Amino acid sequence: MRIAIDVRKLHDFGVGTYVRNLLRQLARLDRDTEYVLLTRPDDGDLAGELGANFRVVPEAAGQYSLREQLSVPIRLGRAAPNLFHTPHYVLPVLTPCRSLVTIHDCIHLIFPQYLPSRLSYAYARAMFATAVRRASRILTVSEASKRDILRFFDVPGSKVTVIHNAIDERFHRQPPEEEIVRVRERYQLHDRFLMYAGNVKPHKNLERLIGAFVLLRQEGLDDLKLLITGSEVSRYSTLRRAVHRYNLHKHVRFLGYQSETTLAALYRLADVFVFPSLYEGFGLPPLEAMASGTPVVVSNVSSLPEVVGDAGILVNPYDPRAIADGIRQVLTDRNLRDNLRSRGLVRARSFSWPESVRQIRRIYQELAAA
Image 1 (cartoon, rainbow, N blue to C red):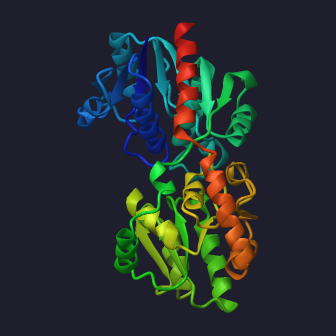
Image 2 (image 1 turned 180 degrees about the horizontal axis):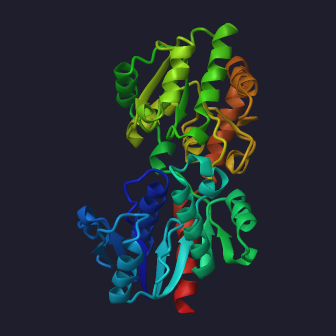
Image 3 (image 1 turned 45 degrees about the horizontal axis):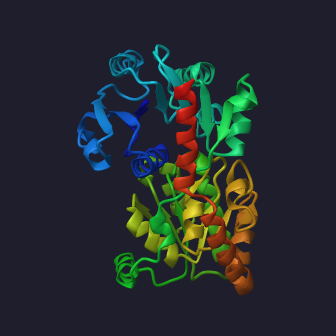
């Protein structure tokens, strides 16, 4: 059996986490199947890290480009796989074999205003429709995302399989004390602080989080800080303006991208992890925080109630007052805080990359055999 996988998003956020864990677990679970990996040209040594049954086919075409619509099918024609798995919604029209597509979310269809142009929206809509129609099976990462796919496209529910994401094992392990001390001192984290991790795109709703933070400080929690990690804030000037508007320069900090090692320490140092996103296909950061023993306050929309269950506080993300009240509840009620920590640790353990990839591999075998 020969399976081709498009892994060009290996180093990205989101889909990149999915791809990295998929490859890591396949390398552990399966030494018999031949895996052909379509990689960026500079990832040529990837196969050597995984095993003898993995080989690399460099693909220079840009993602979401017209060029990949021709070059990817040519690569697949030469490799002659039984099945092609693309871990995002772009499936070239001319794909010459059976295919499996993972659609993580429908954010481009739900929030088209966040795309750079109408042309981008038209392209996204066309690629979604092609993938849904042509793929032999569709994978998605939550029941919420499955509902969205079925809402936008006329496809039988039996064609869409939900296999949950999980988190890296390092978030379940307590970092060495010296790592915790290093991170605390590097960022001078000596006050209580709220933490957000993820990118800072508009649907992440960080302006309302800043509004909730203002309310908390005005109502007596003026020792509190807000730490925002993820993509560079310079790309979204509205956040900087919100900080200037409320004179929060000394109290809101943007740390940019952090390694998983540093994140594991930051989660454990945070008093509350807050994730007020308006839409998530799955939402890994709250799960990482829960695995780290940090209580979480998250939105009560899209997939987040499904992921967090009863192990977090769910709030209306459109109302800064509701976000602030959820945070205050955790900060001021020690019994609740301890209860959320305990439930969060148990909940996070119920999501497993080895089990998720076993399910994906069974689908590989089923589709390739057909």
